[in-house]
Image (cartoon, one colour):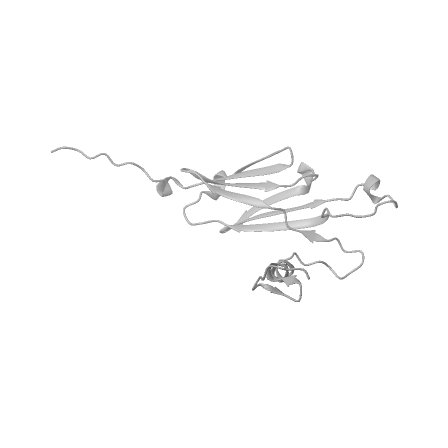
Length: 145
């Protein structure tokens, strides 16, 4: 007899988080020749004078990345292509995503969209969204009368 630790989230051998993983999974096209879509991971950090977005895009060429700002949203689109070497018939398993991707980040009030900067190095896209001057906290000096 084997003892198994009881888990209230397990049902019929499936974990609840697997159900949520499939629910939030990036949709795939049903057309045979259509590119797959994937969603690269990103970190969003807040600094004193700016917001910073860092996105992992290994294998994506700089020229295949498009960043646009419209109203209060920052849209990042691109594509990672499967190389001919990787299309070899001897492939047994492929776990990496290829095809188009798209991420949209909504900019909070008090950002200066005209001064957004980006840099791409070693497969990491870094975007700096500066805060507007009036949104940056400032110290007020207390004077003695």
